[in-house]
Length: 408
Ligand SMILES: *[C@@H]1O[C@H](CO)[C@@H](O)[C@H](O)[C@H]1NC(C)=O
Ligand SMILES: *[C@@H]1O[C@H](CO)[C@@H](O)[C@H](O)[C@H]1NC(C)=O
Ligand SMILES: *[C@@H]1O[C@H](CO)[C@@H](O)[C@H](O)[C@H]1NC(C)=O
Image 1 (cartoon, rainbow, N blue to C red):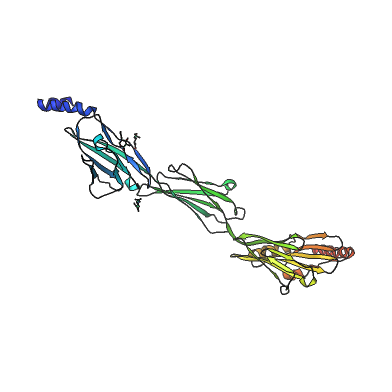
Image 2 (cartoon, rainbow, N blue to C red):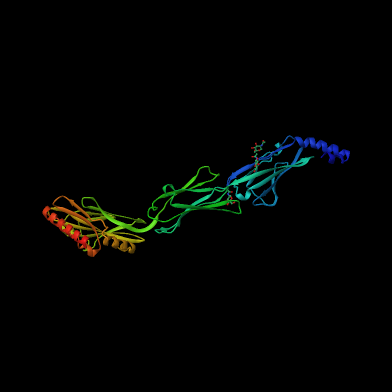
């Protein structure tokens, strides 16, 4: 610098020296600006420590939306602002020309506004002095969770995809899988868009088994824009036809049909060996209630559990006898419709692995037996009521039959 100055003519050297002293003291206070998308930012710019005359303030930008340096606004000595190269009223001059404060406010910010804003003070006599104000734009992610339609199977499938789209800086996507941690897999991918935002997608995979069905997991999205984490819970629902239809006695003469399946099965009752009784019995969804105990209500009642994937039945045999027995009933579970289930059932039945239940209730008046079988096999089931001697006899016969069957 000194070498350069020595070669100058004396008057110019003196002038340059004076200006140097003046400009050395001069300062421009700028700063960094950060804004959340659609928010407002202040672009600070103030000239201090100079007594020179300010002629004009010019703002330039170099942003994602304007990648070429763009003169976009001037502020004249009267404090009047003028847009150059198109009007963008989101910019507002909030400084004070006389105070050499060129501060701008920018509202409704988008990622396209991100970049550098250059504030140039034109002074007399020293000329232009500038500073650059970086603007950083934060974009919160657009979050979503897409659940896949799942059916029971042995192959690994995608249960759900959790997405944090168009976020800046990139969002972090994780899963809280609790007890399923060992049984699921997570695959996460990110794509950086042209606008500088990032879309992060995380998939939760696993084998759609019955144990997994009904578990709730959570996708957790965290980002620097909003300090709190966002949690998107979801329950893994594995579609299946109604399974294991059961009838239980909830209270005296009130029966309830139970079955698992997804979507939740609908239940319907009918009397499969006769028409529905004209009175004395009431149904409400899965519940069957006998309001009276007359023999015209006797028969084989069917509970059918069905959903969009199939149906399955269970049976309840009612036998009301005058006097001694208030309610004599037998349960049958029938695995129909579902071929797979029927095959399994047939196997279990043949191998004698189905539960055989012998209960004696109200000694001497009711013999309750639960059995499972096909309609033909149901004939084997007898309902016994009456004296305890009779029951004794029936049970003995049963035992004989059973042992006979075992020896076959
Ligand atoms: C402004 O941001 C830049 C980088 O973006 C950083 O180096 C600088 O220290 C920041 N200045 C202030 C005043 O925050
Ligand atoms: C410049 O003007 C802005 C807006 O009125 C104000 O907030 C800021 O404090 C001023 N800067 C200085 C250094 O006085
Ligand atoms: C903000 O900008 C968007 C598009 O850039 C526009 O549709 C919207 O009307 C603006 N909102 C305001 C309040 O200026």
